[in-house]
Amino acid sequence: MMAGQFQYDSLPVVETKAGKLRGYQWEGTYIFKGIRYARAKRFQLPEEAEPWEGVREAASYGFVCPMLTRDNPQGELLVPHRYWPQDEDCLSLNIWSQSLDRSAKKPVLFWIHGGAFSMGSSIEQKAYNGENMSKYGDVVVVTVNHRLNILGYFDMSPYGEKYAGSANAGQADLVAALLWVRDNIEAFGGDPGNVTIFGQSGGGMKVSGLMQTPEADGLFHKGMIMSGVAGDILPYSTGDSRPLIRAMLEELGLTEDEASRLETIPYHDLAAAYNRVSPAIAGAGGYIGCTPKPDDFYKGEGPAVGFTEHAKTIPVMVGTVFGEFAMAPLPFNKEQIPEAELEAILDNRFQGRGKELKAVFAEAYPGKNPADLLTLDTVFRGPTREFVRALAAAGGSVYSYLFALEFPYQNQKTAWHCSDIPFVFHNTELVPVANIPEVSDRLQEQIFGAVMAFARTGKPEYEGLPQWPASREDDEATMIFDRVCEVRHNHDDCLLKLHAEASPKFDLAAMMAKMGDEIQH
Image (cartoon, rainbow, N blue to C red; front, side):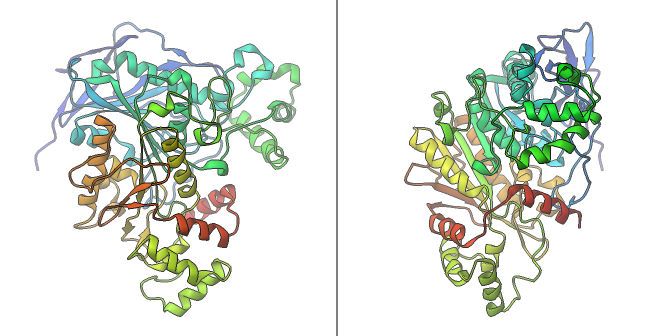
């Protein structure tokens, strides 16, 4: 076995606006890690990074934003993770590129991690690694850390003008990172005039939020939203933040006149106080932060308040996966269970309408096992369908997809939240469960090819796929990514309607808690 090719000393130094950087090259890919794109005081808007003298090494990932609770390393077969040191000084980004020629003008893909608005990082999942995407797509990949939870989405504005942007500081960090890309990415071979932002789950929500952020207008040109349209299930923040802040101050033994001390309280103590008082306030319908708050900076989600004029000009790829929150295994083998027994289970789950649902499901997903009704996602799929139609009605160019692959795990498990990420990044080799002989390699090329075409042209036209038209208000043309890929039109309208009628109301917070418990066991 031959050694891989590593270079460092012979590489050119890259000149950025703030100073010089030296990365390294591995197997032909230039890699830069932990580049500071801005700096920020707690609860305040980001400012430009301070310039430095000399050459700064960019070979180590930066800190990730602190979390409200400790990560629990479980469920690694489903979503392999990396855990990293946490610190508030977390405004950094990473770059993978095939060229350092300023005239190369490669498409730029800017990845925004998931974890709602409270968790995650640019390197949290192994599949976030940008090396293969850059190499096989000949593009520049950027991944970014920003402030989260009460550091990024905590409205301190009633306590001073310096806190005016605190409710959306995490989103402002992303704008600052995009400004850095605009000013510096040419030095890494990228084209600042062709930037695609893409993200999954909370990252997808941040993409749709940036579409509605005037300060981000012109900083990116296309958007991809993966399992990131949740509608009212994970709403943005509203209301007066003062009851929350008063409760936290009291918990910390401080008075309201001492609110500015929240800037310097150790994060662990701040988070502990928030965790103790926020449940009661949330239960009373009060403001608890940790999601964006509509204001002059962020206009609110397009389907709810109307898309901004600029948002309508941004081509969008948006989709979901078949199972999303179905992390737990089925308590039976779906290939072997007797039909009568399965129908009884479906009737019990869907208030006596199992047979009716089974028939409609067969029309929406021909060839799928009817047991998959038990794992079918409607949390993201319904709101995503409405997003597609609303943007199409507003004149936008929007392409819909659904990732429906079954995996060789727990009796052909349906696709779960995050299971499409390795395919988008061309990283199935890093996620063992994503490997299916004679299936996953071909599907990876199809998905990756569509994403790369979209990043280049705004249309996901790839020769290995059927023709994929943009959706219209009355015609959602959904690319089904599966063992056989096909475009289906309004394929699950009847299914979603009947499923909603026959299902109990969904509680996302309860489901997330249950999902975490199921992953651990």
